[in-house]
Image (cartoon, rainbow, N blue to C red):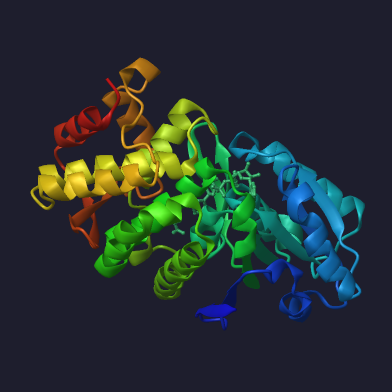
Length: 365
Ligand code: NAD
Ligand code: GLY
């Protein structure tokens, strides 16, 4: 068992990372004993892990309300959120009841947003079951749903009581989803940790094949980065924006291609290549740095070419979608770029042609 802490003004919360954590009632006990508890999950995760979570709660004398949602990014919207509210209200759940989000980032983001809204805020726990959710989305309190015009556009900052990550759940994760999670892991190396980047380059073949011990290490090191950044900038007034490396381009891919067509991590991978190419155009990265990033992502079985004009994604369409980004300030686009591998910055790019050219070079032809 490894434990990290997200230090926040209100005391913060722990991140427990362990094999078998779902079956350890002691981790849940401080938050759920004597409470009404709802587990929000989906139809894919339920048959795999719901019984484990429910058994742990039963050992604590808690019989949870179960809310099973349809699976997928395409369901991350108001109508699905309403199903959570319907179930909580029908069961007369109160403001002090506890919601547990058991699943990947979609369930975590939606469950967290439902918790933020229900009776103006009910406590919630994150029990992430995908690599992406364990390394990124379950930590830091960003909760949201999508809007047809933009990814994660409707949401709230709302922190969980704790994150309980059972790395054994990664054994059932399909390879494509594992790769998607590795994109966010690579992101931490690229934006702030050259040693970690080198470690990833060394171990990517085993990580990509699902070596559980190494994946556990990747979860721990990723959460260290996330916890440190969130503790310093909970509401993204500065440094936290660096965690969006590759995301402005990536969100454009997800929205433009239709939610779910490209996995979030796949879109981020292709987005990081675009951002790297733009960083090279600005004279910060060398061509060999860009090649290094492309090679690492390719070795994780991630896409390194973004959708192109043939998919309806012309450079101009990208730019139109990117203008909905949450980093837009006073109408001006800001991007996270690399000054060097392991060092990121947020910057305005005055010359739009450079952005368009970087998109064009990184897209399928
Ligand atoms: P996901 O939640 O859609 O999960 C991926 C797939 O794996 C789903 O089909 C899911 O049902 C299935 N699954 C989950 N756990 C499984 C397991 N253990 N075994 C087998 N299958 C399993 O996708 P994701 O990649 O986890 O998360 C992506 C979402 O996270 C996006 O909506 C993205 O916007 C969001 N996100 C949020 C943050 C944040 O800070 N809040 C950060 C990054 C990404
Ligand atoms: N995933 C970006 C953030 O949490 O800020």
